[in-house]
Amino acid sequence: MTVHALFFCLRPDEATAQRLAEVGQAIARRLGLRERPSRADRLHVTLHHLGWYDDAIPEQATAMAAVRAAAERAAASIVWPTLPLQFDELLSFTRKARNRPLVLSGGAGLDQVRQFRAHLGERLSAQGLTIDPHFTPHLTLAYDDRLIEPEAHTVPGWTAIDFHLADSLQGQSRHVMVGRWPLGEPSMRDSAPVPR
Image 1 (cartoon, rainbow, N blue to C red):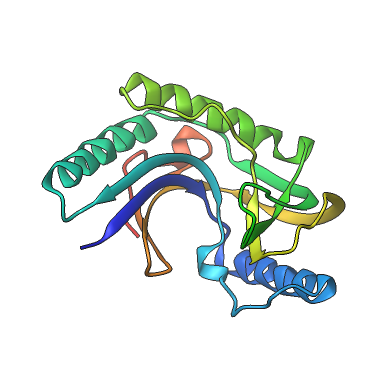
Image 2: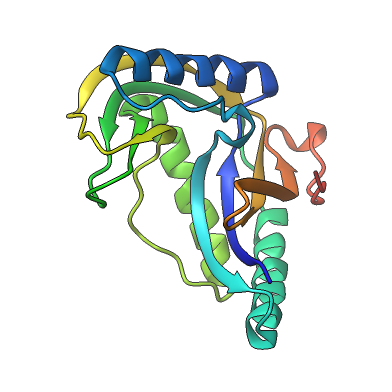
């Protein structure tokens, strides 16, 4: 039995992911937070969460397959330029009293991500999927019980050349990329999903 969480995301390339993981570790040391082994392979900016599904329950397994198919149709219909991401704020999310996410977020440097997320949401809605209107673009660096108040902190991001559909296997600390769609000029992209 596995519980799956499906979500669309932007992922840094391997070198950028390693750099950002090292930034996260340095920030954790500076702030006296818990340090954990590098999570470079899991760094991402979530765009849309598409629900949790228990594959041991037939109805949920069927629902997950239907949601994934609809999500792939929506993604394949998108033509969009590459997306620059720049972070300029560090803060803790406060939805939980313990194990709070410490994240990089930002203002104008993430506006194009906000626009792309809205467009993807429209395409997902057209496929009959329910979309959460609330969105704070962020990259999670660490988790700690301490609350870190928002502070200015500029960190170079990357230019996203694709977006991904991910399956987070709950309790396994593992993300499986089940689809990838390029961004950029139509002549330089292929709209078909590329499993990873």
